[in-house]
Image (cartoon, rainbow, N blue to C red; front, side, top):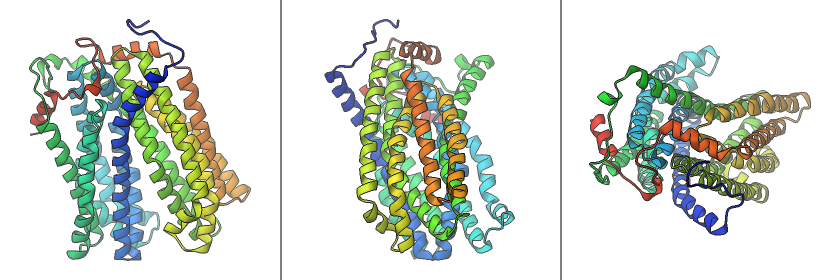
Length: 495
C-alpha cells in the first residue's frame, strides 16, 4: 500500500465535483485548441478549392500524404514524453522533465530528416503509382514548401505536451487562437494577392505554426518564476554524463515514444485505408465524396475525445507521480463517465442533424443520400470511439502506451479490416460495409481498453511511477501552476 493513500471503492460527490472542475480547467482549452486546428485546416482546403479543381485535388493528395507520413508520426513520437513528464511533475522531479523535453525535441528533429526526404520525392513516388502527373506536380510543390514546418512541429508538439503535463493549458488556447486568426490573412495574401497558389497555402501554414511557436516561447520566457533551489541540468550536464545512465534514459523515452506513435498512426492510417477501399467500390465518385464528408465529420467530433484523453493523461500521470493512486482512479472514472456522455451527444447530432450537416458539404443527391445513411453508423462508432480515446489517455498517463498500440492493431487490422472487406465486397454492402467495419473496430477497441482499465491495480501503477520518475522533495501538484527555471534554461539551450 502506498503511504498516505487508501483505496476506496466509491468516490464521494464532492471529490467528483472537484475532479470535474480540474478537468474543465485543463480540458476546455485543449478542446478549443483542437477546434481551431480543425478550422485552420478547413481554411487551407477552402482556399485551394478557390484556386481551382486541379489545386483542390492536388492539395487533398498533399494534405493526406503529409498527415500520414509526417504529422501523425511527429505527434505520436512526442506523446512518448507525456507519461514521463506528467509523472515527473507530480513527483517534482523537474530535472527529468527538462531532460525529457530536450531529448524529445532532438528525437523529433532526427525523425524529420527521413520524413523530409519522403516529401521531396513525392512526385516520383506518385508517378510510380500511376497518379495524374499534373496533380502530382502541384502536390509535390505543396510538400516542398511545407518542409520548414517539420522543424516547427518538432518544437511545438513537445512544448505543448510540456505545458499540458503540468496542467497549464490556457496559454495553448490563446497562442493557438492568435495563430489561427492570422492564418486566413496570411493564406489570402500569399495564395491570391501574390499569386503563389498552392505553394502560398503551404507557406502560410508554416508561418502560422511558426507564429504560434513564437507566442508559446514568449509565454514560457516571460512568465517564469526563478527558483534557485531547483536544479535543472542540461543534456550535457556532468551529473548525467554516465553513458549507462544516459543510455537507460534514452531507452526509456524511445520505449514509450514508439508504441505511442504506433497507437496514433494505426488508427489514423485506417481512415486513409478506408478511403482507398472506397475507390474500388461501385460508383467510386459517390463513395469517395462521402468518405471525405465522413473524415471531416469524425475530425470535428474528435476534438472533445482528444481533449478528454489529454486531460485524463495529465491527471492520471500527475497523481501517480505524486503517489496518490486513489485520485488517479477517481480521474479515470470521471473522465470515462464524461466520455460516455459526450459520445451520446455525438450520436444524437449525427442522427437528428444528418441531413442539415450533409447539406453543408454537398447538394449532390446521391452523395447526400449515402451521407445521411452512414452518419447514424458514425454516431454509433462515436459511442465506442470517445470512451476508447479517453481510455487511451489513461494508458498513456500510466506509462502503458504499448498496450494501447497492441489493442489498436488487432482492433482495426485484425477485426475491423476483415469485417469491412467482407461486408463491402463479399456481401456487397458498399460504403456502408466499410463503415460497419469501422464500427466493429471501435467496439472491439473500446471493450479491450475498458477491460484493461477495469483490471488496473492503481497501487502497483503508483509504485511503477516511482520507479520511472523517482521522488524529489516529496510530492507536489502540477495544478498549482508551477513555473520553474527549467523553462528559462531550456530557452538558453535553444539559443
